[in-house]
Image (cartoon, rainbow, N blue to C red; front, side, top):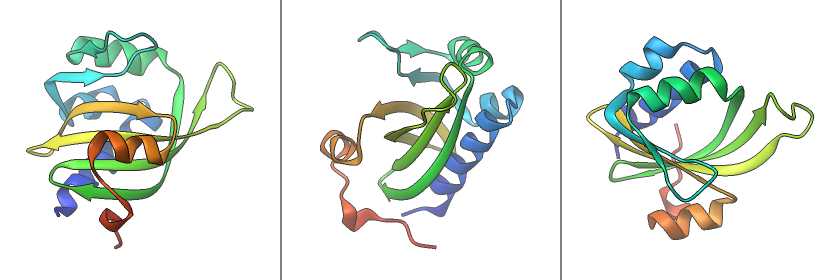
Amino acid sequence: MSTSEIATVLAWHDAVNSNDIDTLVELSSDDIVLPTDDDDPDQGLDELREWATSAGVTFEPGRMFVHSGIVVVEERSTWASDPNTPIEEAIAFRVVDDQVVTVVRHPNLEDAFDATGLSEADLYEE
């Protein structure tokens, strides 16, 4: 396990939450894959910039699980479109060379574990 993977994901959260697009781009690979509301994910830094400037989301990370470059984070996501209804979800990040390569949203931790192969045993404890 690498604490740099955790640090990268936490810095990515901070950049999203503070709308620091330059830092967000630095923390992301050129061909980053992002989730969408349909089955066709977005890819690339231009798509990331567009999403980050228009999404209006704040992420509050909870417990984190990490193994072999995959970080799953329990999240409370608050969207500007419905600020009074935070969403409890899990987001899986793939990190390579201190850059986020893939972001996948899951409705809950169990689904994220099923998709990534991680489990409670992979809990990151400082």
